Length: 127
Image (tube, rainbow, N blue to C red; front, side, top):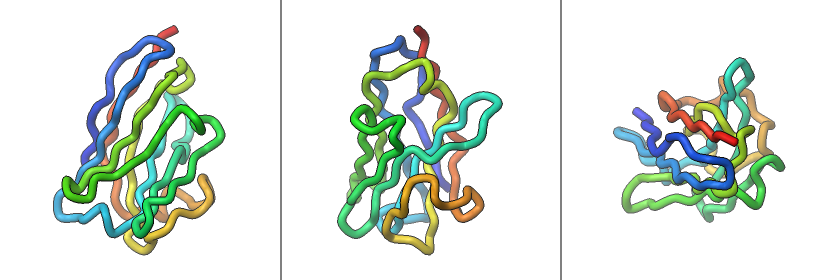
């Protein structure tokens, strides 16, 4: 089971840190992606962190503002979000594809490729 937390309401320019953890699944073994789904829109891939070397990939929309990291000892993956904009509003999900250790290009894989999803955590950014 994958669980996200850390969402909330902030004003534009603010920061949040989202967390992703799992029971029965060692996140350190797989590439982990963070997705965002805005109301009425598709789920968009934002960032990925690889298993072996923790290399990262980012969508252009969040590059320079968001940072993904992992804490293997705690079985956690984090998404630090800075300089938040109203367009960042949505539900954030972390996802794992147990067949993949390294990240591929952001948005290159369909959502059904991912084996584990959390229920999401909501982020609201007001102007």
